[in-house]
Length: 73
View 1 (cartoon, rainbow, N blue to C red):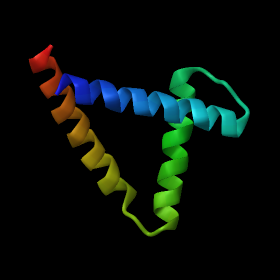
View 2: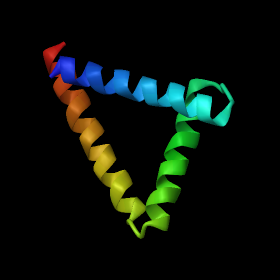
View 3: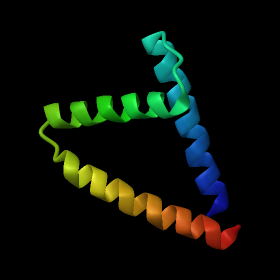
View 4: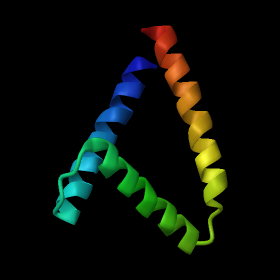
């Protein structure tokens, strides 16, 4: 499970780097992640997807995967 967790963070890091390049801005990591999540949620909203449901599910996934990661570590 730890390897999968690491792969997810590496994919996310690559995505954040690409997002910064697309914007032409290199803010602090927290600000960049906030902007990226905001843009993805706006996209979801425009596509008629319930963003509150997405946020709840993401929180459940993070909790489960970080708990599993701590158990392996």
